[in-house]
Length: 176
Image (cartoon, rainbow, N blue to C red; front, top):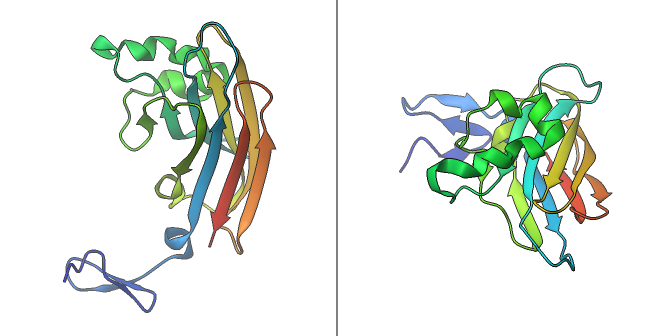
């Protein structure tokens, strides 16, 4: 039996066999459903996407949740275009080193994609927040959408937004 991951009756058994209570924040889940729309354009490039969290009153630091960019370019040249995600870049992007474990990933194709953000917000203090999603595309446009979040969730909650061009439907689901 792996005692690191044994969860029983609301307790987590640690490596030393000590029973530790599970906090509600550890058990809470946060998932973002993100749609990349099909665009009828002559020159299509997959969008770069940044997802971050900020307090609802805009005070404090932005917390990076996901940064999707072209990681396969030689010599990590994909980072050259990250400043095109202007709001994210100004909030926190310029201070981050990419790739960032658990945050950065490859661009996504047209369609719906689910991002599990539970680990990134597990230690988040209780409060009202906004999850911000920004997309920018080479030879294309830029778009920003905001989704409300109350953390930790007391009951299942959902927030949605509809993009106009670079983003499609966005749905944020929080579960206790």
